[in-house]
Amino acid sequence: MLCHLYPKLNDILPVKLIRRFVNSVWYPVLVAALMVLSNIFALELLTFWLYLGFGLVAAFLCEDMRAVIPIGCCGYMTISAENNPAKNIEDAIFYQPYFQVQFIFILVVTGIVLLGRLVFELVTFPAQRKPFPKLAAGLILFGLAMIFGGAFSGYYGVRTAFYGFVELCALSVLYFYFYYAVHWNTVKKGYFASVFLAVGIGIAVEIIYLYLRQDVIIDGTIQRALLYTGWGMYNNIGCVMAMCVAPPLYFAATQKHGWIFSILASVFMLTVALTQSRGSILFGAVAFGLGALLTVIKSKGADRWANLSVFGALFIALIVVAIIYRDKIDVLFGSWPEDTFDPNGRLPTYVEGWKQFKEAPLFGVGFYECHGFRWGSLPPDAFLPPRYHNTYVQILASCGTVGIVAYLFHRAQTLWLFFRRPTVEKTYIALTVASLILMSIVDCHFFNFGPGILYSVLLVCAEGAHKRDFAAIQKKKKEKQKHMEDPA
Figure 1 (cartoon, rainbow, N blue to C red):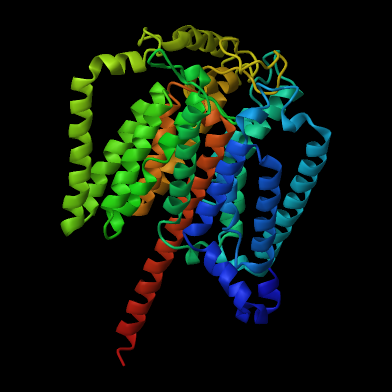
Figure 2 (figure 1 turned 30 degrees about the vertical axis):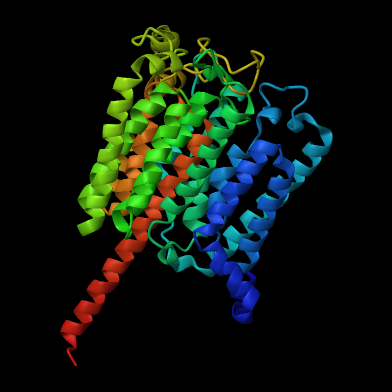
């Protein structure tokens, strides 16, 4: 902001160095590293202060607010197991007055700065962006359906309306903010992949730490109930890790020596398996398989053969290990429920959700009437509601026909964005989004705040990439037309 008001600041060496670092691949790595340190050593407060500092630098010295994107992705996953607000209700730092005062101050300053920079962008650069993003209508309609979920059912009230509003914020606030506050025409191709690559490395480290922190393997069996952090248990961790599998493959397909990223994506997929989350393993493998196929198709020459060799070696190694160590693998994954067709009693929960939809088919019964599953040790009147373990059952039961129609309209808009004028970058973003949507068939990850925030970032990155690439095409057409009209 200051650099726009006082252009001479752009020539100062420290400002140049700050901008160069913020726009490099190392800045998301730094943000993710702080996330990991906070998660392992319970340094939430220090990390939040540092993130605030990064935001202030971006607001006053950088050309736009893209520096906040990695913070938006990582902030939710900084919370340590020691400060898990659901498991440690008395001892967690979030319930301590000294933390609450500072945290509220950080939130207030962050809100003021972000809003101030947004207003500055809208006033200073009104011609750089259309008034409404491409996905605005679908997100707003779906958000209204969540806010009014349960209306006229007898279960509607301030509590469920407020929760619907919070869900709307998780799924859309960063999408709208970054649409207006980032100059997408100047964002390099593959920016989304850089961010999610850093996030994936950070989450992989957090998963490995879970195995080092305590005796997770007992009598040769992984006890997945012990796999939890401050921001989620094994299913939540597996979901985010699975969402990070496809992004490295973008670099594998587009960069020289991309096979290195194919190896990294393979490591990410193996790390997903360590979370013991079956839905994440299954649908993460689908995203990995499709991404690997696309990588082999899009890469060229020696890089194509190198990528193919990596995937072939991984496939052969998995088959050999599965054959030789089959009995040990069965024991290692012995904590999985034996009934594959009704895992963890999901089917009765689905039936309950369907019955509640039939009870209030127009707007549903709201978010607090499912009794199939409760979060940790939270009391029945806690803010986080129980879930139906399926996005579509959740929407039908909680928001009724209005909700599912709004959701399908939003989904149609996203498909149109991804596959109208498709590019390699948008296709990999679509794969990452698809992994979340598929995992949400067996869990309600779409309604979890962390994946919801990542989802909103993916959407705005897709729209930003579309805007940048389409603007470049239009510019070339105009130059060609001008040359034809005036060859001299």
